[in-house]
Length: 121
Image 1 (spheres, rainbow, N blue to C red):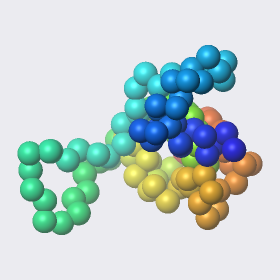
Image 2: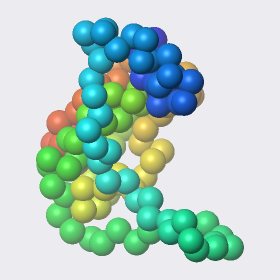
Image 3: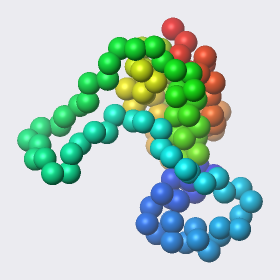
Image 4: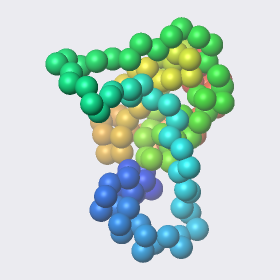
């Protein structure tokens, strides 16, 4: 249920109601969102789905762990991850994560993960 509440907190209604519960000691403030491929200009018109090119570069463990912490705090669980699904510290295969109540969501896969576990071959 924590995962469901975490996702709900990112909705307008959830944020409004969350202000009433701000004294809850379990709340964690999100000061930033780790980088996810999401570079669409608002003043551009797109006629197709555009994917951002993520350069081949070493994965920074700190960036990977920031992403896994973020995903955990907003309620996602992991469905498994491999090094080829990360490029330059960016998770490029979003099938590696499952939203709460989604098919394949498991409490045993819910939580922050070390970069070494996420980047295994």
